[in-house]
Image (tube, rainbow, N blue to C red):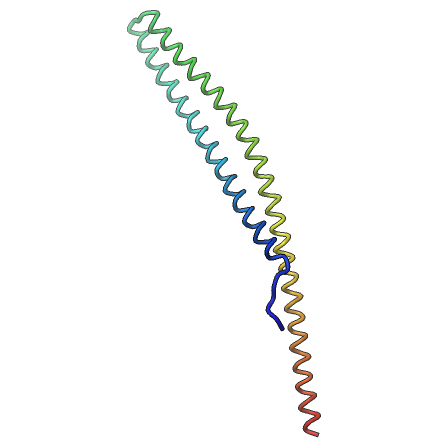
Length: 147
């Protein structure tokens, strides 16, 4: 009997390759989101540093222009935080869309794997039957030639 060949092997290989590329894309999006979140944390620390510096200046006495400087710094940090939170929201949507794509492709690949298993099982069953038939033929030939 000829060697087992999965009839949809090329399709399976192609889908598997696409799935890996999409998984890599998903990981890249998640990494990008993590970087945005790290930047937000940095801004929070920067905001605390500016507030502390401002409070120290106020405690020892400062000019209105210095207070305006600190106020402008805090406003800039708040604007950047708002922008980053918006980008994180967009990134969440991209990640969810990509996750759905990966899940769909995973289901396709899983379906092809199941089909491959079924075809292999059928092939194995036919191989066993063929071997049984060959043994029966051999035995009947031996018995008929012994008579």
